[in-house]
Length: 145
Image (cartoon, rainbow, N blue to C red):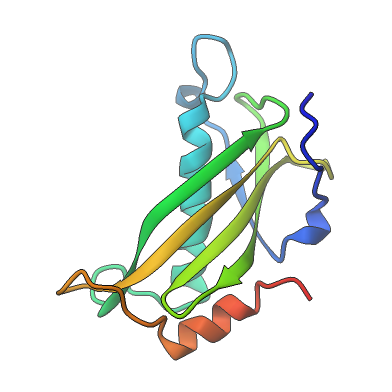
């Protein structure tokens, strides 16, 4: 068990259920570390599309991942059912840093927690761009009070 500060579910404002898959397990019988990042990527993009109105194929401004991290607390494995929590830790003019945590269904202590930073860029030029106003307001709704 890590000495990482344990964040309860109440520290996250948006949740997405994710079922582990047989192929997520590695030869040691637990979900491989790289799969945790796919869970983080999934919840962030689900939120941006579902709540933020991001059109991943046509939006003029898109988010590029520039940093990510994960701290592993307790292993998960197939067939665990998960809930991934999301919050916004910091919003700049063109970037946002998310905080995420992965929980087993019915548990209040996370199995892992991480960060994910997007820089928003103009799709055509690839240069940083201010976060669109509507999306910014949606992201602000994920900040802790």
